[in-house]
Amino acid sequence: MNRRTLEDVFKLMGERIQIITEVEIPPSFPVNMDDVVSTTVSGMTCMSCVGRVEEALNSLNGAYNIDIKLESGNVSFQGVSLEKAEQAIVSLGYRIGDPGESIDIKDDFNWRDRGMWKQSANNTKWCLVGCSIGEFGTLAAYQYYGIHHHLSWDLITPGSSSFDLYIIFLFLLPLINGLATSVMLETAILVRGQMDFKNALSTAFGMSFISMLMMEIAMEATDLIYTGGQLGLDPMAVIPMLVVGFLTPWPYNYWRLKKYGVSCH
Image (cartoon, rainbow, N blue to C red; front, top):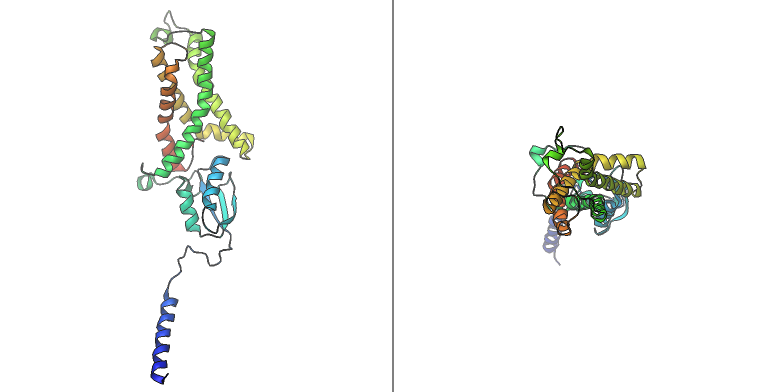
């Protein structure tokens, strides 16, 4: 090999080395994959939420030493970049950032987030389970014991000869019991997720009450339509009550989760 050939070879090698050194490493890719990376996730309210986030991170190649704190929302891990981990978490419908931190709704809010619809649907489902226990249980008891009263304007108008607080209470009792059983169920789930009882009860009331109230009113109204305004449970009304009870608060739950990162469950 002559001198000219060697010069050409070294020149070519130098160009390749220069090309390699000019390639930029993405900033989201940690220099040391063994470094502990952490982020804060909002929208997790129970151990099933923790399980979904953990499963999503475990699905990423190389992820290990995953640690998720339910109350603080802190998520730490090793083996993958922060960007990849946050993308996996956001795809589930959760939001990156401190819980309760409001997003500028004019700039960021929209109704097209499929992941958020999926997460809010799951939250609404559990809320519906809790409400249905008290609602259907009370109406079934009315049916079993033969408690039948018809709802009318005279019945609920103060000063009317037919005004009866006891009967009004009977009409409100399924709604009250539905709210109570839903709060009890959600409190139990939060306590199981290692939250103390006082905070769990406060969280269940704070996050869920409006959603539960909308759900209960919709279910109660649907039942009264099927029974012709009579106390009791019409078996034909069960499926419509569940459907209406689910659909009524679902957009509200989406909005609350999307804007504040706070779910109804």
